[in-house]
Image (cartoon, rainbow, N blue to C red; front, top):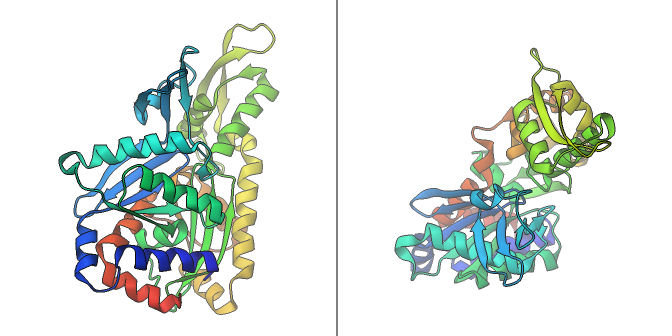
Length: 362
């Protein structure tokens, strides 16, 4: 386990009393697990399950910075607002890009899931990319504390995702998790309660959207926004050829005439557009496999790679990875919630994950 990973687990154990104690029980009763994603924020409340799943988007008044909308309501404003309104995505590439706006967003979301317990300040466990720096990690903790958390601790997203996917993280058997989110792709090999090797790539769903925007501009002289690109990706996008190729209308502005125009694009067009970011994800997975100890690599070859995150929903991405690595690829059920579900289990089962902590040697 890396020094940073040990620090995460160690601080969590000390910060909320993970050891078998009344404090651990009390904190678990008030615990809040957060997957603070570039594209989507999810929250799991101890004993209640996942109560929030909203886009990580905030709308503010440009001059007063007054909060106007958060989540889905704010996302619907993207590309449609007057100059007096700012629509902000406060996280980029898996890290906080706008601290104050992240704090506002978290405060709003925490209040929303704590409606009937508004006077309580929860212990918060936040998933972070394995490749974040100490400064980036501190920013996440500080934002959670300033948003109202009593205690804030971090867990690496690959470990949380593996726990949420039900993988045997505490056993000697090696497991590989690939988490393709909005801003980052996390790849990790896990065994005996620790991350043995990992890779964090700041290329994921957002870069696919940007690649589609660039492709339509280059090939069709059509300017579209990233939200339109995302909608096309969801509707007909694929990473591997499909039995029946999808087709959809892309609406935007003609770069020559400046007038509105639409073109019909296919799944094949989008595959060509996304070829570069997909190739980078494949190479990252291969790199992690090459670094895995031989015994763990054999386990992975036998049991397969486990795919989570919003990117797992891209049609054919499992087939692409399987073809390029020669290893079976399994998309876990409801892959988008794996990280927050795993972090929630950590809060709800402190004794179990105290044993994982001790096994990691932190």
